[in-house]
Length: 134
Image (tube, rainbow, N blue to C red; front, side, top):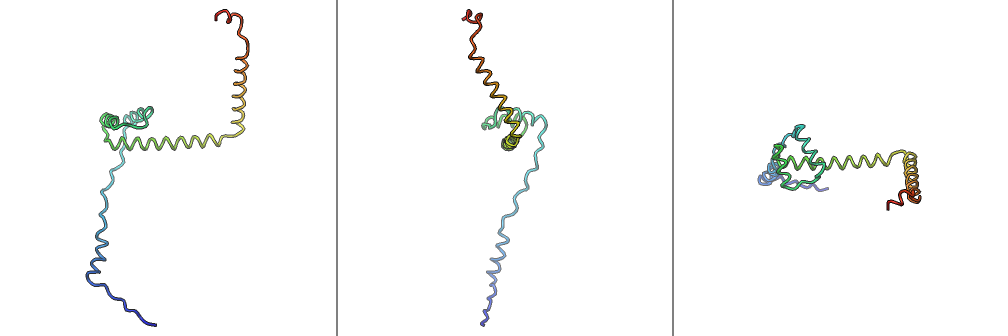
């Protein structure tokens, strides 16, 4: 069995090796703390969200100026609100799918009976007093 000699690092190689650690990027700036929106700001944002899920840049500027927020805060609030709406809709869909099937069948039957009753009403002749008005 032959032994292999391990060649020690030269000074330049050692320095290069250490520079790998020193060349790492410095930590990024600390993130901005979470914005605590006022009730009035939330009310106005929610009111706007009811009829406009996506904002144009002009609308964003208008809302940001009106509410004393930055453009980025308005953008982020709308993104988060759309995500919340999507989650809520998926949860609602899941809830509807897990409803008792017998209850759903009963409501379906009642609905069909009502539709049939409407169909029968359409087939009845109009009273004679209604005929005279046409």
